[in-house]
Image 1 (cartoon, one colour):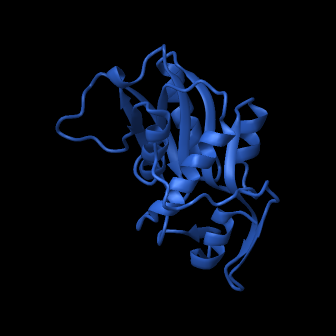
Image 2 (tube, rainbow, N blue to C red):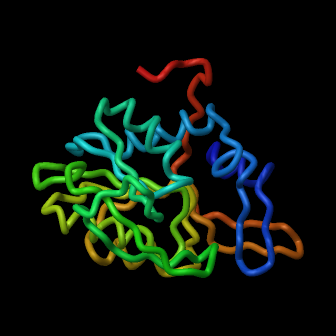
Length: 206
């Protein structure tokens, strides 16, 4: 069992409707040590892959993407879900259905922040049906850029997103893959993964 799976077992909460809450350390309150370890592990798994931009979607993927962007020393771009007064009309737009919020979101990237020379590593906190990942892939392709890989913190292996992305030829690395979970017994079964060694939490990124 790896460090992320152990953290999920200790602090994760399963809710009715196949929902796994990890907001105590991943997507509401942020455990920086866990984020740091995930960034190191993504960098290791995508070793040898040329990357000059990290892409995620607001809001929960931003913390992981930022630490990973620091390791790669490349810009981090996050696709926005909402228009603001200073949103540009010059943008790439796609759509993604949110499994958690049960709604369709328009997501966009301003065109100056993604271009045809970019080699993009996509990262996010969760992968369920793959809607968000496919929206990000669409944005990358609209810009003429290249998807070099997809890094996911927690994949719901019982849903179709991961298998579909892999069948489409994308290099997908998920640090924890949930095979099944039961909200009544609060039990989780993970897909067997290589052991991730927890690095010294006092190490700095750099």
